[in-house]
Length: 430
Image 1 (cartoon, rainbow, N blue to C red):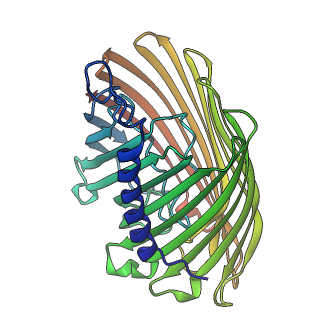
Image 2: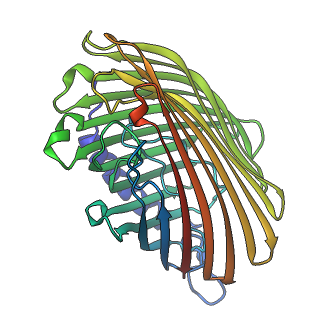
Image 3: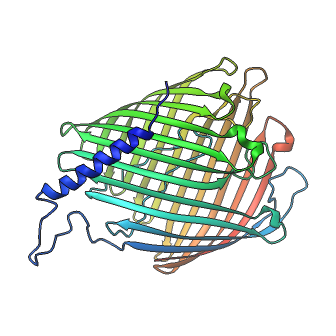
């Protein structure tokens, strides 16, 4: 089964735009006027600004810039991260960036949490580049560019439609995979979604997306691919803020050249989503996935899938965040068939004073490389950081951070490493 979405996407967008125009034109809510005779803002609410800019400049010292086991190189790295985002209606808070990764089938790593947003119209676009400049190893200089735009409209009859597109020009994480060279690529995610409130207790949701991966160097052309994803879910609202759901998802993975690694992945999942109070937001998903390759050269996989997210304020000054998932991903080493990844991360933020914040993060990742003609092996990554941030003004802050990283590799000792980094950063935002 192959999902083709180009023509469907154009048709859905055209119908939606026409329907929005009709909905705005004939809906009495959208034309409500205040006592001055102006449109009241039921669509374009006046909360926060429309245009925002931000700039972050950091100096990072690393004792192992190439993430090697021996012959470590040290360097000082300047990291410049400017950016701009636009929101309609105006807002003081930027929407979270869609969590994507080049090796994840369909692109999307974790689900978007319910923000409790009830605005009828919501649209935004953000451009966020990152430039890394090495003092003594200029060959390692790199840049990344991310552009993400999204749009969502809630109709008066219970139908909500949304779309987003993310373009990301980036490179594989340093110290991951099996190549000592920094592998650059570009990805593009086009995602459309719709939901319909069947009753006060039942909501139907559907998602349709495409995700493409295009590596820059010709030597990596075998990794180029395009994924198509479709899913449907049913939500039962236990309360206004808490819902049970069941979900079906199908992902088709198609490589441009390595067709023996083309696969179809089917998942059946159940879960719980909550936005119980302003203090707690979370998501739990559990189910089974079945990954079937279109040629017998690669092994198939049937196993469980898991996702857990939690943002919880214990007090007005203490925040805990937890992220965890288990799923199959694509491989970056073609002597293997695919990878099963287990990931867990925890973050702790403590407001020490009104303008002083402590931040602690830790994460664990295990990649199990599955093979057909050789012994399976495992890569394990550990990462931890300790930082402190001081806000001189609402728009200006500075901070420092210590970052530790470690990798164990059953593939060979040469692929294991340990890194220590110290980072100083200043950030300004409007």
